[in-house]
Amino acid sequence: MTFLKGTHLDELIRLAFEEDVGQEDVTSGLLMDSNLCAKAEVVSKSEGILCGLFLLEKISAWPELNGAQLAIKSEFQDGSFIQKGDVVVRIQGPLQTILKVERVALNFLGRLSGIATLTHQFVKEVKGLSVDILDTRKTTPGFRFLEKYAVKIGGGKNHRFGLYDGVLIKENHLIATQGVKSAIETIHKKLKKKMTVEVEVKNLKEVKEALEAKADIILLDNFSVSDVKEALALIGKRALTEVSGGIHLQNVRRYAQTGVNRISIGALTHSAPNFDFSLLCSLPKDINLKKSPRPTTRPSN
Image 1 (cartoon, rainbow, N blue to C red):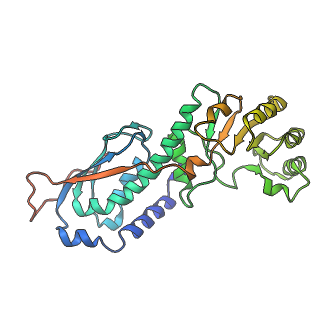
Image 2 (spheres, rainbow, N blue to C red; image 1 turned 45 degrees about the vertical axis):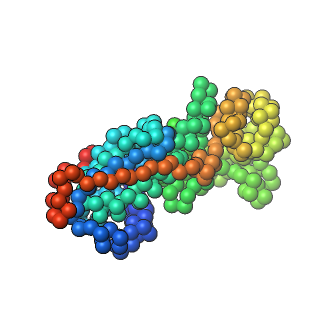
């Protein structure tokens, strides 16, 4: 995904180090020599979908670590299903550097793996049915590009990225118009480039208006399963259909069984539990605590 590249990601990592490490790690600086080397393992404390490994290389090579390069070996890849106790990553390098990287790396890894895991659970619930599980714009400020990446890793699909890359007429837009039909017709007249036009509706009357105005996608907002079935009977194949609002793991399959094309779920990003990892360090048995050479192993690709 091209939006994972560039200065935005660098800035997020910089801010993460700034808030966690600041000018120095006081405790480690007082307790150990800067050249003391160690090994570490990132261990899964649950089961689910791994996401965010690509960030570890970038985090471990951060310029403000003063060139203290870490050797990193990933035992899995993004999208892998991991179980409790699995060693996900092995790290070797200066212990002070490992401890500076620890919380920044695990926070990114835990957040993204949590989203990927919840998305996977929803996708699993609708297995065998012709429906897409989509995210929304209900994301952590500044983290949208990462969180939408995690949704894809979990098997979901991305809705529009922002207000600029898709037309979605919502309830708050309609107060400035004469209704659903009028809003869609105005968009069709004024839109200067090819773009899908989607409209959010709250009842069957608005469904009929959306059909008359030839909306590309009709979003049935907070419809019951029975109301969705009735709406789909009206729509047929004249527009793609989407449901949203009140969808959870216990009812998502019932909604999917109606034949709707898409189900968008804000909870994928705004309510995903954090995936817990721990980092466990150890010193080589033959380590000389007074003088430890730095590792020569370079990070693996």
